[in-house]
Length: 154
Image (cartoon, rainbow, N blue to C red):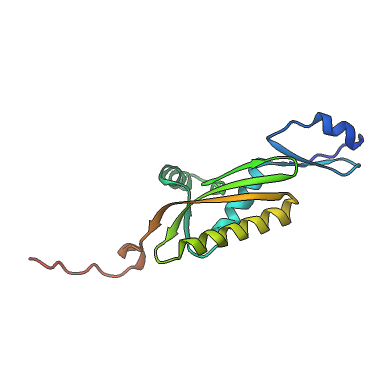
């Protein structure tokens, strides 16, 4: 959400509502960035990292699968929670990791990608990115499209 006002920056600073929006005053107006925008940026950046199978805990993923059946865009904020101030943002990302990936390296990659994306796109300073690994995804035989192995007993 972007708005431009012609009032001086000092008066717009008193009109801002804290918490839900970020305002950057430059003397010629203000720019407000909604929390959902920062959440979407973080969600897309986290999904770009190799080794991330999905975002969110089990309940969020179930709701996400139901949403996918409905027409419309997927929920890019699933598994992402942000807290946005006037100049800083903190991000919590919940993931499901692919089996075999070093989780500490995966978390570092997610942190770096999320911080770079948010700081370059919004100008906010990211104070922290907390990564919670809820599960590990094992490749299923259905995913690989290989025939099922024969039973050891008859």
